[in-house]
Image (cartoon, rainbow, N blue to C red):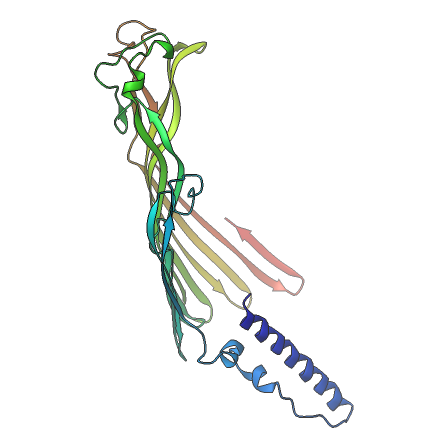
Length: 322
């Protein structure tokens, strides 16, 4: 809580205390001094009364500098690489007698930026448009002999073997791998009061998640032993979610219905890799052998729910949920 908020709360509580004492004194028939805090009590925004010019808006622009690459220090904040980065923040809002709007943006120059735009009419309508970007850096110094995305192959001149000690071409085949996951979400939300009894709310969001992670896989004839490898696995997900709800609140009957839908799309269904080992026979050993690993499957879901209650009298009611 900032200083102005603390000051506002203190004065409001003081006003309540003086007004309560004045009411007791009136009951006792005693004379009461004028309530100097009453204007604060009557105002709808005490912070606006205390701060010159009403609510404060702010815009910030700056530069951050990172001296060295460090994936651990920048694991979640987008500052994993050395160099200069632009950083900007914005918080702006405006109120009128019948509507309001608000704009906020944080970490504009980073991969962890987020922002929101809100417009509404008090106790009737609210519309939110928001954007959120996140970055998770796991490692920037990994190495692998495999190349490709969902179809991993070994370089020309690879020498297979029964175990990793016989991979004589391994050191020259290594390439760098950065294990990073980036997620971007765009969403729109609506809350609308249709009339005194009915209220509607809805939202839709789309998320894209991309990057590279690591997974273990093996080629084997039985579960006792296998030709195992640690593979760079692609992440290329698309998730779309939508929900809409309608609520009714009467004197005795209260209802709420909601419909939810989600769709998940994985652009890569199968991860294949060329077998670097020569432990098995032709068709399975290097160079002709390939393994396959199923990735997260596409799926969609639709769900509906209706809840409510009917008040019979002060001591009895019927509730239902379906």
